[in-house]
Image (tube, rainbow, N blue to C red; front, side, top):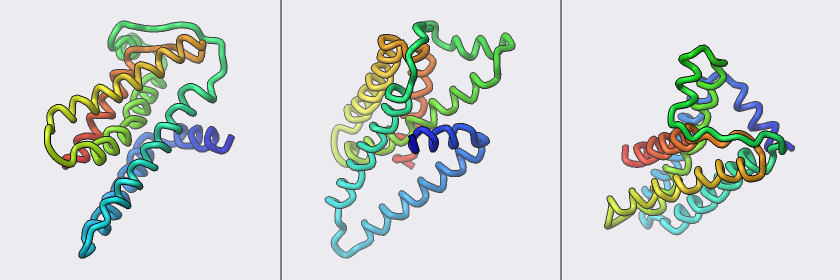
Length: 175
């Protein structure tokens, strides 16, 4: 229940506050990485282990937020890309925009962490496509799960937003 409370607390914060908090977390993450690499003998195994543990926690949190804590009831889907944007432009609830931003933000860590683990050397383009593909399948799997278990509306827009978050995570890594 505490994880759900934390998620609801973060979701309720103003968007600029959420983005600021994520920026501060990134700065702390980057500082830790620099500190570990500045040693005379950099401890790459420790950094890799930290990335794997953080990635595992991120996957668990995403599954918890998107599937585990949801209640059954809604059994719908929207397969038309940018359906949410179209609804917003037609006067729908502005909460749609916040939901889209949160879906983007949700996948930034995935793009960053997989980049940390996989983009170290060689076959850069193939690894980049592999990271995007893995997270696209993960995102689509969540949407299919939501539809199958009647846990919410499965939307292609959520997958698109998740992929944008993945790409932002990749770009942060490449900074």
